[in-house]
Amino acid sequence: MKDNSACSSSALLFLDGDNFKYINDTWGHAAGDRVLIEVAKRLAEFAGNRYQTYRLGGDEFAMVLYGVHSEYEVQRICAALSPPV
Image (tube, rainbow, N blue to C red; front, side, top):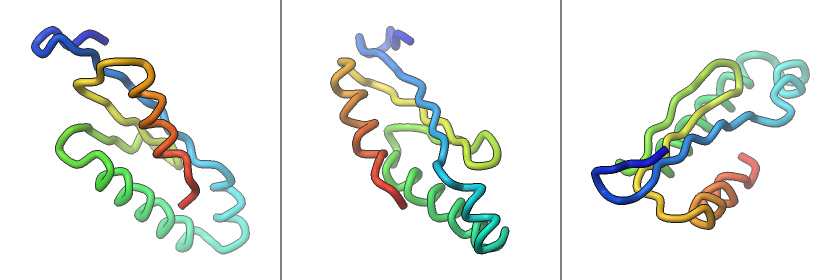
């Protein structure tokens, strides 16, 4: 997506948690809820005021990145979001 106001681009990331069903099945839905809350908190902290985050449902989230200038920058952001919770 092109952000014409700043001569930069925007990107839309779809984030899907791994092994979330395993967490619910092994430790219960209350534990799964705590994991989701922690993930949402960390995404919001990472996003700050620069990006927007959304929970799509289940363990799926989306993040809109504004003001990115290159594909490499998006790849660095994806790498920063990759470590496990």
